[in-house]
Length: 425
Image (cartoon, rainbow, N blue to C red; front, side, top):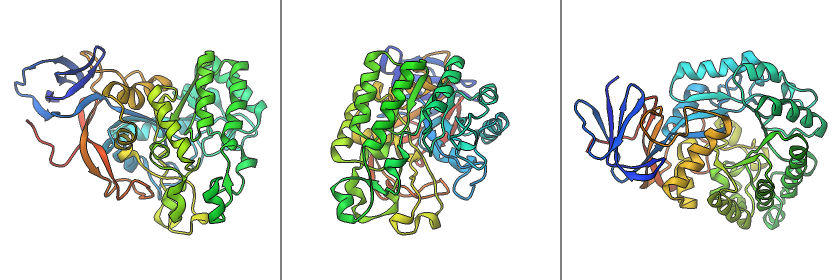
C-alpha cells in the first residue's frame, strides 16, 4: 500500500482544526503537520475542505438478509462510502430478523467481504421482533453486538423492556428504542396537525413519541441501562432527553437529516418520498431539533436509510411504506441546515456515534497513530443530489441542491470513494 498525502485541508485534530497535511502509511495516520514531505506519496487535494474521522451511521437498513430487492450490503456499503461513512450500524429488521448470534456474524462477515465500510450489526431486543420474549441477547453479545433494538417496531411491553435493560445494562450494551406508541399511531400516515386535517389523512400525534420516551426514561432510572433514542422527531422528545442528561441519566439520541431539513408541509404534495416513520413534524419541531443538535442535547446525526423498491413507493401516499434513503447526502444536508463548525460537525457525525457503540477504530480525531478511517468533506461545494448508487431511489433529497460534498473517503488507508474530477494540487 503506497503512502497517501492529504494536502491543504483544515484537519480536525485533538488540538482543534488546523491547516496541516496528513500523511497516511500502511493504513495508519503517520504524520500530521505543515509541509509534510510527499516523496512518492499519492497526493489528495483537500484545499478548501475539512479533513476528519470518517462518518459513523448509527441507523441504516441494508435489508440483507431477505430483502435484497430493496438493498443489499454491497449497494448499501457503496452508498455509505459515497456519503463519507467508514462505519455503520445495520438495523436488525431483516428477514429473518437478527435475533441470534449466527445471523449477526453473517451480516458482519458480509460487510468485511465487501470492504467498503465497517458493517456493525445491531441485534433484536425481542425474538423475531415480536415483542413477547427476549431475543438471544447472550448470543448476540458474543457475536459482537453492542446495540439492541427492535427498530421498525417499539418494545411496547414495559416488563419485557425492563428485563432487556437489566440484562444489557450488566453487559455494558445499549438499548435503542424506536419510540412510537402503537395505539396512538395506529392508522396514521403523517404528523397530526392542521395539514393532516386538510388532506383528510389520519395523523400521528407528537404525543405518540413523547409518551413512550417518558416511560422509557423511567425505566432507565430504575435499571441504569444505557439508552439511545432513535430518530427524534419532536421538540418535546428533545426536551425530555435534555432534562434526562441534566439529571445524569445515561441517555443519548440521534436525529435524521430529513427531520432537520423538512417539516410536514413537504407532505402537501403527497409524494411518498416524504413518508417516513416518525413522520415529518411541525416547523417548530424542526427548528427545535436543529437547535438541540447544535447544543449537543441531541448527540448524533443518523440517516435511518430505509430503501424500498420503486414499485413499493410508486403508489398513492396512504398505501406506500414508511421510509426514505439518504446515506449519500446526510453530511451535506446537515451542513446546510445546521451550519455546524468543523469540530461540532465531526462530533455529531463521527465522534459521538462511534463513542455510543464503542467503535474504537472510528470517530477518532486526526493525529499520528490513529487508524486512517477518514473523510475529506468540502463544505462549500454546491451538490446536486441527482442520482444514487443505492438500489433504491426513495429519497426526499433527490433533485435538490445542498451545501457540501464528500471529496474522498478512506477506510484503513484505502480510498473507498473519490469524487469525480477530484485531483491532486
